Amino acid sequence: MKYIDFHCDTISELADHPEAGTLQRSRLCIDLEKLEKGDAAIQDFALFVDMHRCSDPWERYQFLLQCYKKELERNQDRLHPVLSAADVKMADREGKIGSMLSIEEGGVIGGSADKLDQVWKDGVRLITLTWNYPNELGWPNGMEGPDRGITETGWNIIDRMDELHMIVDTSHLNDQGTREILERRKRAPVASHSDARALTQVPRNLPDDLIRAFGEKGGLIGLNFSRNFIGSKAVDSLPGRMDIDFSAGPVRCTLIHDIVRHARHLTEVGGEDTVCLGTDFDGIEPFLELKDASQMPKLADAMKKGGFTEAQIEKIFRKNAERYLKDTLA
Image 1 (cartoon, rainbow, N blue to C red):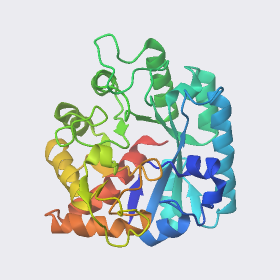
Image 2: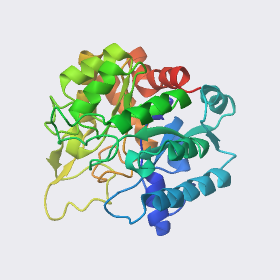
Image 3: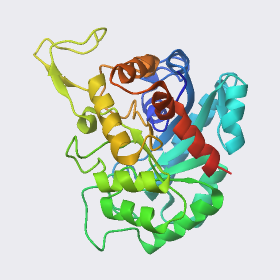
Image 4: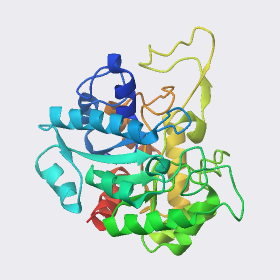
């Protein structure tokens, strides 16, 4: 079954660890061979910038951008850049995987509309407003307060993003900022890689009232596969996971049935048109029953066994994200 994934950190990993391989083939969770085997339709590639670990965030962004562009050029026979709504169809028509570019950490642009315009020209179509630190746009998850919503600069940037038909991503943003965007902004946002707080009590996950608001607004919530957000179980072994060292005892791992559990909760609270995929592959610890992108069909099978209809699975895997991209991108 074709699928669209709204978030991975593969480019950052390849840029920082060239020994891992290339986008064609690597030891990571995502490469082109694995994407093709898993039947990926579109993969979003995030350029992740840790503001506290680099002296010049813009320079770091440029470094990652060049890595992405090299991979795109090297694999133009297998990848089609998704820059517009038309590209969503074009990638499928050409038999290629759609490649969408995002920035994970809105602080990269420093509140500058000029830099925002530049990243749009660079091909960026989605920005995760914050990561784990406050920036010029807003506050991250866990830092709550009535005065800790979207800043004036943040609203100016969001308004400009709307003009450019860029996607606003609230994953990592705090509840206050997310609530303000859902209440005040006309366009629906995405939470590209977030799960349900009712099932796993961490600030990075969404509470039910916000999940419901995403559904009412027509937004999307992408299932994150991290054991920290989905939840985990200590297991002595996993089939096919010889790369995980179980010799010292049980290891906490993300199990497929827990991904299905969060999918069910998000669907019941937000509606079946609200849920999509945001794996966070290569940005999370690789303690996963679902080893990599090649094994995505296992999730579809588990969802079917878990009571989801074929139509619901198709929505979560592809149709919801496809509809959103066609409606949002120019």
